[in-house]
Image (cartoon, rainbow, N blue to C red; front, side):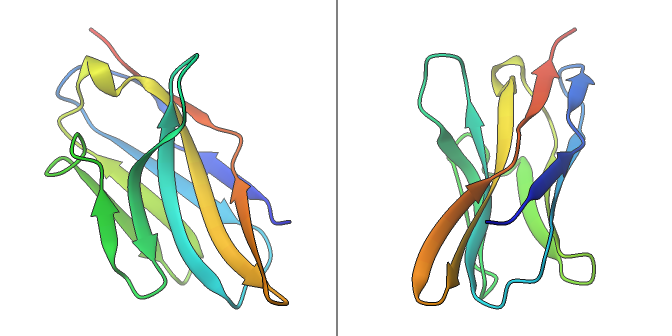
Length: 119
């Protein structure tokens, strides 16, 4: 199991921006994908944006055109730039990593970071 440390959440006004960052502890040689998910109380966790080891990206419809996921290989972090934020973007955001160790696939999660969009 690896540790994921998230940062960058907070309170922002509608139309503002936030940048979430997720750092992974330890070195992993076989990462399938990394992503950001969101979860509201009583609801299932859902994908916001993902990025594969090959650099391919995918986004939830609600995130397209406003959010950008990227990797910083030097720092081994994955970032989510969120622009034009709306009140409906308010949620707890979780970083995820999907990787392989000795032929077995794992999913690990960060502790979550609160994003609140409100005036």
